[in-house]
Length: 184
Image (cartoon, rainbow, N blue to C red; front, top):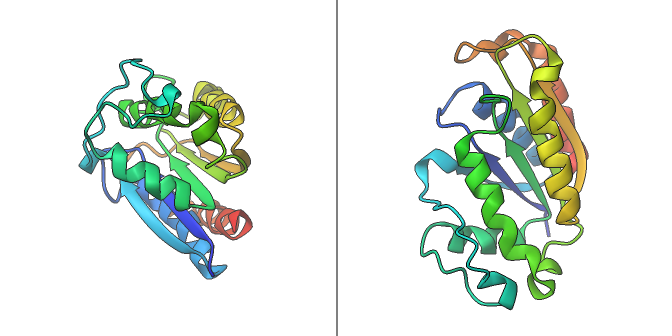
């Protein structure tokens, strides 16, 4: 049975730098024999977590939105690719809402369903200074460690503000492809 990979695009733009970068990681995972399912957060309805803690008590999330189906996809996955551009030194609101809703896996009953998953992150951004992405990098490192998801790799690509600019960095796209192979 092939490995299952969930690719989560946290950019509101299809065919933008984040989507391209995540697609290259997914391509590498497919080349290594994985089945990949892609989610475009901008096309889904994911409401904010309001801290009701129903999930902490082992109950279904109180929000009746697309996350209910996504939880099952996460549980069925062996690895997750998280992609977000840097917006104001953090992840997009789409990605932040998605990660906030992973609190569902905070209770012991649900935690065991994801413990040991593998992950990779893709973080493109406009500025040239790598420090610009530090908040996003730390956000993923801390959040995934807390959830006991193993971050196997990350690709951080500065200097890609224009839509599709990442296509002019073939060495970084190859690096993304290689990361996908490593993820599987």
